[in-house]
Image (cartoon, rainbow over all chains, first blue to last red; front, side, top):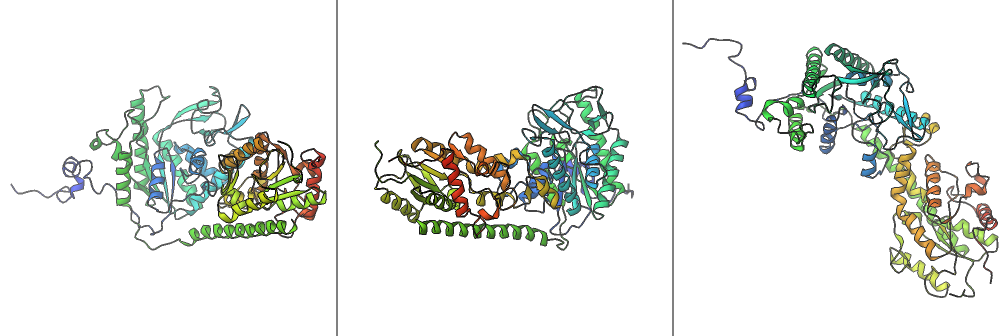
Length: 362
Length: 231
């Protein structure tokens, strides 16, 4: 019997599970993702989101691809001190942004729609903690003024990440979160866990529905594009399961809901908006081909081999073949450092002369 | 050990701020020997105490400077229990503060508000940063204080730019915290924390002048932080 023509007749091998997955095997899969944009060769990426997003930051830095570090550590800061103060993890010191509600709140801070001092500060044993990022400083801040200045610094840097980026990479992490019942302020983690004090009347649990995540993401993207109309947004979903759920469900079921909802929103946004793309890190780690083999023995943390494979697909699909669009800005920072070095050298000279003058008098 | 006749009242040890201290000693009739090295060398950790508790500096030319002072003191180590040391060691802010600000970090609200591209760094961050680069200096001063009668004096508090006050304040507390005898020039100028006036600065703008030296040494004499030799 002659083969009948149908829409599946001419599909490429990637369209068939047998050829694309079963026979290709985990490390033989190709074409998992191809960027929908041709980016400039010196494209700049801002990275934010849940903890898995930091792998993208690191991979970009390691390959010397334009990662925006809008809130770097102070100059010549030892690596261990920078790490202690959470510098260099995301493009600004936002700490993890787990939910779409959190992202929207931060974007509204960046646009000025919400005042910098609107979100709570928590005082504990003489130190002050920022409720938006309670673990950003290992011992909290010396006082409220300092905590607010640091928050304003983060907001400035977060805004710059948006305005200077070609691509805003955002990793969606959770649907579950906590909010202030009166103000609606979302918390990155439940008050009373890392800092603050839990108050059942003031703090409400939210397990955001697909429509809510979608609305928050949509509002956040709109606001970001008001700051940078050309901004492209690359979404990923963190494959890291929930540490705990307050939903009342089994944590495995809650995790599946959370990731499914986020995956659905990411897909919807990418389908509806040519300025949004979805990169399948979630599928690479959590999909059947990996047989959960990339998870550490706690079945939660992602092992380095998994991250490496994710990044291999990320860079294989990235298209940076467009003409360079930046360049000059990087040079400016170098020039500023050189100018300071020159001033320091001049001061050294003055010091030497002062010493010699001292010998003359002696 | 009996005191040797002819020893100066003090050995001034430290960076380029030793010049103003020497001039202040001269003004007050104190006999002082000076052993000064650039703040750059102190910052880089090129000057240290060896296992025999002798002062050593990297580089033959610099080591020769120590030898010259040893000879003028009649031989032996420059560090001896009968020769008080006035040390301008541990700050060297010119090598510490500018790099901290390479990426526009500031530590005060006014500076943060002044420019949109500035970033704020917390006092805890300043403390960890300064501690990292000065922990060896603090250890040096503690060891030195066990060898000689030691007074450490902070540099003139004129603050050449952003962040100087924050680092100055932290290091003053850190040195005080080592338990060594310490002179904070801010106290000699009323203790209100206001920067030193231009009339106390030398033409290069980064060192105290003779008027500064006279006042700071006078203050230390008044406070009993340094003394005239009794012999």
